Structure formats: C-alpha cells, structure tokens
Image 1 (cartoon, rainbow, N blue to C red):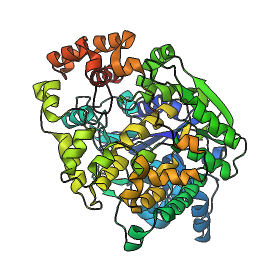
Image 2 (image 1 turned 135 degrees about the horizontal axis):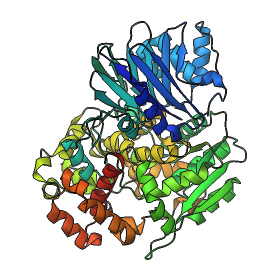
Image 3 (image 1 turned 120 degrees about the vertical axis):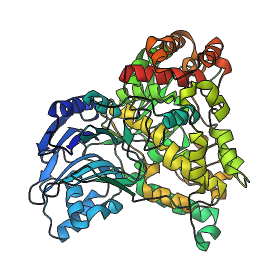
Image 4 (image 1 turned 90 degrees about the vertical axis):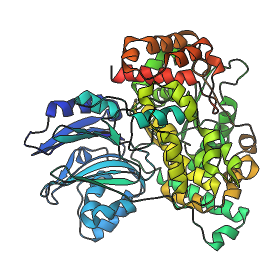
Length: 590
C-alpha cells in the first residue's frame, strides 16, 4: 500500500515541488519504506511506498519506462498481476521488476484504458504519457483505495489523502452544502464526487478520469453492479448457491494471499472474519497470525468477543493475539484518530480500529479483513423491511437516514438549507437500471456507496496510519458480481446473510455462527460523557465554529442539555456527529 500525489499545470507555471514535497510528507505513514518525486515539464509526481510486492528497489515509484514513454504512481494491490505478466510477456513485453506496478504500465500500453477491466484488486493510480502529456487517473471498482483531487489556479493536484491536498495549500476550504446534507443524513457518508470541502473532490469508484494537457477533463465509469439474473440463477437451489458461493469465497481469499510478506487476518469473532481465517487456513497458510481487539464491558453492554475469536483461533491453530484497550486509552488517543481521518467519520469503530492497527503493525504488514459482508450478503435489519416495499425510497430513508429533512433544517443555519440532497440521491440510485427488487436497490446502494465511504474508508485510513495494508476479500469484484446473481430471498434467510452463514458452516464452528451479532459502542462516544463531551462542547462553542456558522445554536443547546436522549435510528449520537465534524475541521482546516 502506498500514498500517491501529483501536480499538473495547464499554464506556463512550473509545478510547485515544495507543495508536492509537503503532500508526500503528509502521506509518509501510508508508505513508510521509501518515497520519491519525479518532475518533467508541466507535471510532477510524488509517491510514498509500503513494500509488499517486489521488495527490491526495482519496483520503486514514481516509475517511468522510457521505452514506452509512460510513467505511473500507484496505490494498491493487483492480485492477478502474475497472470497478466505472463500474458504480456507472450505479447513481447519484458520486465525489470517483479511486482504489480510495472504490470500496470505495460498493460496500459498493450490494451489502452480498457486494461482496468482485466485487473483484480484494489487500486488508485495516475498514468502519464510523456509524448502527449495526457494523464489518466483511475480508482478501483468498489472504492477500496481513495483518490482525491483539487483544482487550483492554472492546474490540478491529486493525492491519496485529503489532508495532503490541504498541506499543499491553495484549496478552497469552504463547506459544500450538498455534502453537509449528506454527512448529517448518512452518518458521515458523503458520496463521490463530493467532499465536505468545496475545493476538494474524490474520484468515484469504478471511474477513469482523462486529463488533457490543456486541463480538459472527462470521466467514464468502467464498472457497474448489475443484479440481473437468468432463469437458471433464479431457480437454483439454496444448497447449490451455498456451494457456488463457497468456491467464490475460496478464490477471493486465495487471491489476497499474493504478497512477498506474510499475510495475517483481523479476527473479530464474527462470522465474516472467522470464515476468512478458515479459508486462509484451508489454503495452507502456515503460522497464520490473527488479531482481535476488545474493550471493557460497560453498562451491561459486552465490550469484546474474545471468547468467539479464541474458538476460531484454536480451531485453526493460529498465532493469536488478544489486544485489550482500556476505555481511558480510547479517549486519550482519540485526537490521533481524528487526525488520521481523510474525512470526518463518526463510527465508534474508528478509534478501536486505529489502536488495533497500531498493535497489528508491530508484527504484520498485510492482513485480510471482513468488511463488506453485511452489505453484499444482506446482513442489516433494514433489508427485510424493504422486501415487497411499495415505496422503497421512503422506507429506506426511514430506516437508514439519521434525520429527515425537517430536522436537518432545524440543525443547520439558513445559509446551508438548499435542497434535500440525501433524499434526491437515494431516489436517483434506486431509479437507476440494474436493480429492480427493492431489497437489491438497497444492497446496491449500500455496497457501492455507503460501504465505500464508511467502513471501507475507515479501514483504509486507520490501517494506513501505521503502514498496514488491509485486504477485503468480500469486496472482490468477481465475488460481488456473483453475490448479485443470488436471489435476495437466499440472502435474507436465517435472519440475514443466510446463504453466507450456510457456506460458513462447512468450515467454521456453529458456535460462532449461531450467536448474536456483536456491536461494541464506546459509551463516551455513543452517549457523550466526561472529557469527550467537554471536548465537543468546546469545539461547538469555539470562535472557529461561530465563524463557520454551520449549526443552529438552539439545536446544539438542545443536544448538549441531554446528549443521551438524541440517538439516531442506527444508534449513533446526533451530538457526536456535529462535534466530530467541527473537531475534524479545526484539526485539518483551522
């Protein structure tokens, strides 16, 4: 995993190499092993490297091939790069490195922009053509790797991390009104291309952006998730789908073992991560390292799943590490987690994942993780409510949205009212072709948008804060396409994720499958108490907050008067949403 950056000029001004150096420095944690800058004419490129594939200096970046006249900066992992290499060698290409980066350069030369359709993996890249001056930016199908960009006077900059663009300077940091509505409606999710900052955009998943030397930009989507199925798929039995799915899972996990360093696993004790560990053990991984984080029990709510993770670790003989985090450490380290966020994220998991990543990085550089199974295989409570819905947009919003538009108007000051962007966004997504069933409309939206800008972004940000690469087999695009072919009734069976649970029974103990779903809130973040409440109060009453003028004082005062009384439908704190946003802005913007 790595961090990429660049500056493209469309006028007669040379790239600002000092600004590029600041972007590189800000992303050092993403690539602690080495870094470099390459400049030519009107373009300059930066890279920070985490050595996972081809540990030699032959794979250093920025990478330029003078024979092809092509250069690249790349963040990610291409799991099928050995197969692509053999195909390219058969076409006459010769390689000087053994990793995946050079494969992308040759693949672009051989197949043009369509080369992305051949890639299995997670990626964000910039490829430049020396002779034409044209640049191509690309992001993987499910947005596992981030890519932000910011137009500047006479040019454009891009980076893996939004704060890197802020470090370079010259960015419009005013608030995007539509993004603010999304943030306060979708528990901090802001769909691409928006970010909360008007001057920063992010490339949408599954998208290519071509940039001409004069600055003209064009985008095209190269992948879309389609839930169409033929008669054979519709009539196939639950048992047959279970076997087909298990084969697909095996392939997804096996692909993510491609590395020149050992691959471990994050083992939460739930079905999803336990299944990944079982499949890694089945694939022959020796001395598999697994990691589980837990917190103290508070107020009758269990704070860890150590007992279930231990069952799986014993079953497969892993080298297992329990990581216990006292609540006080969670709260003390919270400012570091906020600083590690590309965008503000309100999930309680952020700080836990941040501290877990720190501990894991002492022993592993790559881990597999279980994010995505609930969205892909129907594990959330709102999916059954949508079955047969006559008004799926309204039903989805009622179950998922943190506050309706009337409450949003009561939350923000009048200059931010605008339109109900969140409702319009859900309606447009549900009306798009490729998903007819109400449940599948929601599954598609959650998989391609809500998942990308919540758990997936959280995993990338918190792991990369410690130079740890996280791989997510449930977001293997071939597996996601397979899952889309499985009728919704099989996913909703057995209380949700039915077909996945039955596939898991063939590998992991029933005790892990037939237990309640875990949920570990940090009470000080869910109900806002103690030092965190004071930090939020200070942030929302600060001079910076008053000057920004986002939130109505009467609404903030109501939340502050009784924080625990204002909880969203998905069990989040409405006050934390406001306080975290202001805290993040004060940390990164000022």
